[in-house]
Every structure is written in C-alpha cells, then in structure tokens.
Length: 263
Length: 269
Image (tube, rainbow over the protein chains, first blue to last red):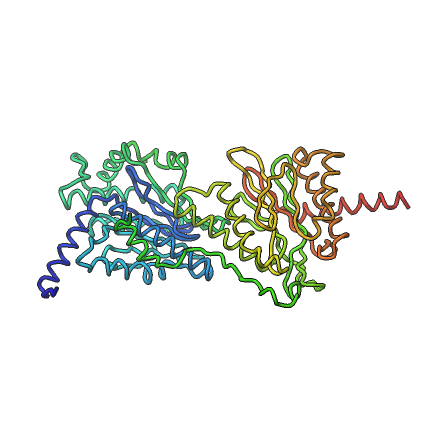
C-alpha cells in the first residue's frame, strides 16, 4: 500500500496525538544530580515508578504501564547481557538509549500496523563525579535528549520546562531532605501546569498560581499519593548504588510539606 | 500469548539469551592426560558458624601442577550483600561462575522486582557446578564451592556445600572444600566434640579455630598456602551484611595462634 506524503504526515500526527494524550495524565518525574548522588523524585498512586536498571543506572517514566514495563525490562536485559559479556564499565546510558532503545521506539512509532508505545522515560546515570552524571529523556518516537545537572519528564512540554527551571536552581551540595523537597515542589508545579494547560485532570480548584500554589497542590496530592524517590548513592561502597528511600526516611523528609505551607 | 509489550521488549533485547554461563566441551576422550597441566587450582577454603554469623577463611595460593601461580588469590567472594561463595578447584572457572552468579542474582532482582529466594540461588549455584562436570571429569576446570549466607527469614546463618555433580547439602556447623579439606575433615569434628559447637563460639574463638584448621591444611597439603608471606583472607556475614576481617584482627589471631603453639611445642621439648 502506498501512502502519499499527506497521508504520512496525517498518520504521524494522529499517532503523536494519541501518545501525547496518554502521557498528559502521567505523574511527572524530577531528576537531580548532586554531590550526594543522583535522585529521581516522583509521586505515585498505585504502581511503583522508579526502577533500578543497572549498578549505576535507574529509570522512571510517564506513560502506559505496559509500555513502561516493556522498555524497562528490555533495558535491564540489554544492560545485563552487556555487563556480563564485557564489563559493567561498558554499560552506559548513552549506549543503552542511543543504540538499543531509541531505534526500536522510532521504528515502532512509524509502523502503521502497530500501536505506538505511550512512554516518556527518564534514565539517570551516576558517574564517578557529579560532572559525569547524565540524564537521558527518551520519547515514544525514539527521540532522546541528554542533560546533566537536572532533568524532568512530565505530561506536557510546558510542565517539563517549568520543572527544569526550578530544578536548575537547586544547589549541588544540598542535603538529601532539601533535595527531595525541592524535587517535590517542582513536581507540584508541573502537576499544576499540566492541569492549567489542558484544563483536564489533576487540577486543584482553589490552589493559587506560583510557589504557594505548588505547596497547596502538593499537600493535596500527598493525601492520596505516595512519594517515591530513587537514589544512586555516591558514597555507597556497594557495586549496586541504587536504593529507594524507605518509608520512615521519606515520612520525615515529607512531613513539613504535608501541612501545605513553607517551613 | 504474546502481546504488544512482549514484542517491544524482545525487539529491544534481541533473540540472544541475556545470561548464559559458557559450558566448555572439555577435551575429547582420546586427549592426552594434559589435564592438571597449566590450569590454576584453588585449594583450602573453610566456612564456620559463630555466635553472630558465619566466618569464611581461605588460603591465598593458586597452583598449577607443582607450580605456585599466584600467592594473592581471593577465594572468598561476595555474590550479593549477604552471600559469600568460597571456591575451590579451577580458579578460572570459579571466577567465571562467580561473575555469572552475581549477574544472575541482580538480573533476577532488577527484572522481577524482588530478590531471588535462597533456594533459587542455591539451585543456580548447583547448575553452575554441574555444568562444569565434563571438565571436572578430565581434571580440567572443575570447581566446588561452599555457599554461606545470612538467612533473614530464619534469622540465622546457613552453610551449604556441594559435590562435583551439583548435589547440595546443608551443614549445621562448618564446611570445607579444596584439596586440603580432606586432611582436616576429622579435625572439625574433634573441635566440635571436644571444645564447643562452632555456632556457640564467640567470633574471635571461631576465627582462631578456623585459622588453625587452615594452618593444618597448609601443613598437610602441598597445594594450600600458609601465611608466612601473605595473610589468609577472612570474611564474616552477620545480620548487617558482609564484612572483611580487618588485617589487624587477622594478624592478632594468627599471632595468638603461633604463640600458643610455640609454647606448646616448647613445653613438649
């Protein structure tokens, strides 16, 4: 079957709309690279959202759970095969995203006979020094963006831009609690932004705009939602640097935010 | 049934298996007995329980035939945060298997989002031992491990040992493997029956007994190294995880041992 250029563009746009529609409802993820390590910070309702990929790499994403799962397990497969056959030193996010994931997602996105994956994934990798840390945001169409100090994935580009702006202001030497709180405020700002942009889900009727609004939104969302934080710990002596912050640890960090006002 | 997501995963990962321990074919039946030739072999490793966990000690010698290849070999290796594998037999094969097992355990945990069960880990080790059987039969590349771990569900340490075909046995007190383990087997029983069960000994006592047994193995087995030049390797697993026994602690234990025995020999003389 032949497609005219018009059909092709039309089809691509429809697929893009379909994917974006699915992503819009996702809970954003904030990424921070700091002296203490690398953080992925989010708020979840049901499913777990932050995953270990390899010794110094983790992943979180917005999108359909089944698509996220496929990308996640595929990435874990590739990383472990490479790490065992060669060396853990050869497993890098750049190779994984650029050579294993991106081409497959691109092909799937352009294949008229299959539904595109609805996923926007954020890979975080810790190097020896903070300057070597890297984030890769990978989109459903195979496009990916590398960044270093901070990164975000969210339901809309505006929300992502807003998050990145806030996260970039976080100083590199902050302690863990401050970093998580800053990440959560950025998360709430993005959540608000998605709601305003789309007039859809996630809106908080009476929350004012700006930083105060983010605090109110966050306090509201934390009633049902649960904070989830993945840490690649620079100080750890284990080969596997990943850990998820525990319930108690998080409860202490999040307590000041639950009240819906600053400290 | 294969859904979309399975397709996406296999499109990413490709058809090759993720982790496959290489199985060497071994030599053909007509091959000459070159077997013990140039292959480095591990020697004596010991695991004993103590009050707060389990101690592993191993000598540092790697031999090939009558040559000492290396005197700093590490034969007590961590598979994960709570599991040690003490290895004997072909050093090359052991290291490959340890690399494989580390990846296999982590791969399971990361892909399945739950840690592999103790039973699952023991079966993986058994398969890795059995896969080397054809090599072991020809005196090439066989290896036999002892697995020590902290079992969080039981709240106590566990020791497992294997035979060459991969059969798994659990030991209540101690385990030993390697060419020097045969000579000291009865000595373990003697200690348990005349002094105290290892699992009731304070850590320092159990460490001293384990080192004494290793020293006897080094005296009686040509392929087991003593510690005249290089200290043995000792690691402990407790409820908190794996720790190296510090050089100072090891030196003190070894010195105490040497002094005690010197006095004893002097008294006899």
